[in-house]
Amino acid sequence: MPNLSEQQIIRIKKLNQLRKLGINPYPPEEYFITNTIFNIKKNFREKDPISIAGRLIRLRILGKASFGEMKDHTGCIQIYFNKNHFYSEKMEKEESYNIFLKKLIDIGDIIGIKGNLFKTKMNEITIHVHRLTILSKSLRPLPQVKIDKKNKKIYDAFSNTEQRYRMRYVDLIVNDHVRNIFLKRTRIIREIRNFLDHKGYLEVDTPILQSIPGGAVARPFITYHNSLGIPLYLRIANELYLKRLIIGGFHGVYEFSKNFRNEGMDRIHNPEFTVLELYVAYKDYYWMMKFTEELFKCIYKKVQKEDKDILIEKNRINFKTPFPRIPILDSIQKNTGFNLIDMEEEELRKVCKKLHIEIEENIKMSKAKMIEKIFEEKCEKNYINPTFIIDFPIEMSPLTKRHRQNKNLSERFELLINGQEIANSYSELNDPIDQLDRFREQIKLYEKNNTDESMFLDKDFIRSLEFGMPPTAGIGIGIDRLVMLFTQKSSIQEVLFFPQMRPEKK
Image (cartoon, rainbow, N blue to C red; front, side):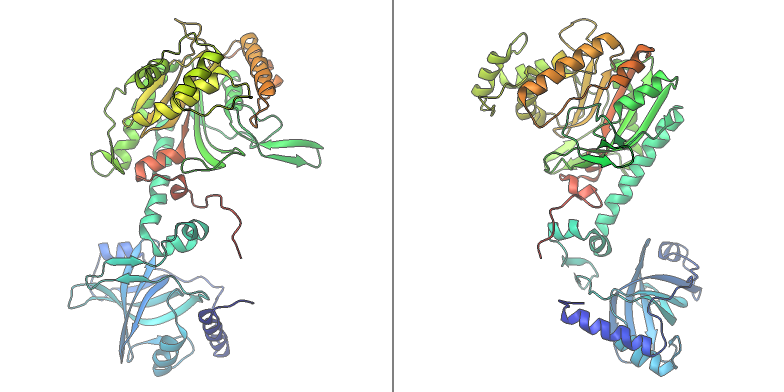
């Protein structure tokens, strides 16, 4: 093992010493646990016999007595060793304390302990350890956390952001608040699933490897299937497969979907991300707005411990319903002073120039892209409380029904919270002829613009529409951004266990 630190060399020597003493530092057998630390504290009874396992995170060796702290998946507890009452495997009493505990056990080791409960003079619940078994020897030292006299963390030695993301396993060991982020993430997903199941909607799985990456406009990751002899794509969206299931006769279907887009990374974008997609037959986007309000109210009540606003940096967010509904062109006019209705490409370019929005001069850019950029740069940040931005120009929504009152608009909304898009919803286009025409139009546009993004014609999806799809409302909700919201984090990397990183420099 090259390039070992001094600490690692010392720990490997201890590992070898344990083996010489006949102690397996990585025993294969089950270690019997009677309780968790959380339940021990909750149901404390003096002198109760205890058998638990976890990681040693502090150890203070004194004379004939020593104190430490161990941690399991539910919390931390103080442990106490007395020279006259402590035994380890295959060693006498005195050797157990002076050799095994003092010289061969390190902070970071995973141990099993047996003993009895008592309370110290400071009224702290403590385990008097009679026997210690090493379950996994740690060969790398943990970053040390400095504790003040009141036993509060005052300095975290593992706070470098890049290292935290790269070595999330260490981050979870030493930073309890990080663990709580991911516990809340699981709770949010569970509450959404319970809500949708209660409504009678079916959770399904659709392909991740797709022959045509449809359902969105994005640059896909490409792979190759050797047996079939064809290229395959990691899915950029699961929309078209879920619609096929609606055509097949299911009333409502949903999926927590892992999507992949070979695009840029920033504080709200990761190339791999999680989306909830839901499709319900015989509904429209007006119904979906009410449904979304109900869903978000439910998540808020179940996940927030107190009925109070969410505070992210300086932004205070509440979930009072109904959420405002603002047409996108009205929003742009209010925030920029420009009325974009009926504007063509050249006029939109001039508007972008006046608003100091960068548009490449020699590249033909669609009206949809320019309107999108104007809204994102000049309007989006202004919507802190939940707000529905509705009725997008038809060019921006190739999978959406034309608006029933204005054929130049689409029946689409985006839900904005804290200045960013959290959800996107349509009255789904179910006219196969119109859908085919719009697909072809989009493909021509992207080929002409020569962008990195791609639009593919899914002929099988058109064929499925020709069998008839009922009127349908669909929505996609960004789970990572939703978790950011409810954990009050401003970076997507904070809510992903293992965010994508550049290769580590040696």
